[in-house]
Amino acid sequence: MNTPEKTLKFLDEGYNFPSIAEETGITNEDAKALHTAKKRRSTVWHYTYNAIVDILESGVLLPPRMTPHFNERDFLIRQFGESIKKDKGFQADAKLLLFSQREDWEPASYRAARLGGRIIPLHYLNDYELYGWRVYRVGVSRDLLHPWIRLKRLCGMPPAMARSLEQYAREMGSNPYDWWGTMRPISQDKWRSVEVYNPVTKSWEPLTGIPKVDQQPAPPVPGPTFAPDVQGNVAAGREIVSRSSPAASSTWGYL
Image 1 (cartoon, rainbow, N blue to C red):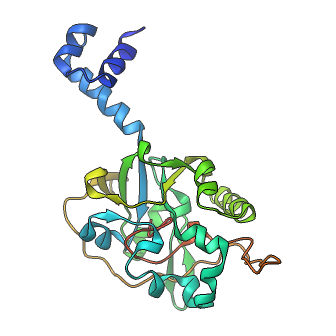
Image 2 (cartoon, rainbow, N blue to C red; image 1 turned 30 degrees about the vertical axis):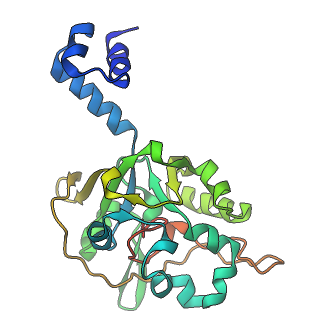
């Protein structure tokens, strides 16, 4: 076993940094750096936008259906009325709090801006600065979550809906195998980091306070065509990745 592997093994077993240095022959600083790198690799990110104030003030990340203003802010409820709640795809989506293991940004979490009556999807991270938006993310341990391939079954998502979401996400440059999630709240004591994207330095930086943001909901973004099946369920499902409510959770943007 080489020195880095031995160091990570000792970290897993709870050794302190001086003991690791004695056992492996590396410095405390190198042992700490390896520990940080390992922790970073297991961190996944909940990317969010206007919802950041609600998230920080409440101190908890919530699946959409648990958020206080879900009925008022969900665009499918506003568009189709209360009957949409009977749809199996809608029910599955509303349970999900999603994260991504991508370090740069999750394309599937994109939002849209309204300009002169037009709805403009913002598919690139640096587009948000043009409209005065900031992009935020909350990091948690992957150990708290399920991978997408398991999560979509646990939440009861119709297979046709899952396939539609995956296809649409890949067209945007996203990889569904990067997705992790849960159907439970995640409280602040389990967060590893809260960060904001700096478009000047093109890097993620720690968020040090509650920002001031526009709390108005963004308009929905056109996505896959709704296609009811014989039971009346929306087979293609709603587009998880373009959810636009700013409530204090998200599939992707209450993520």
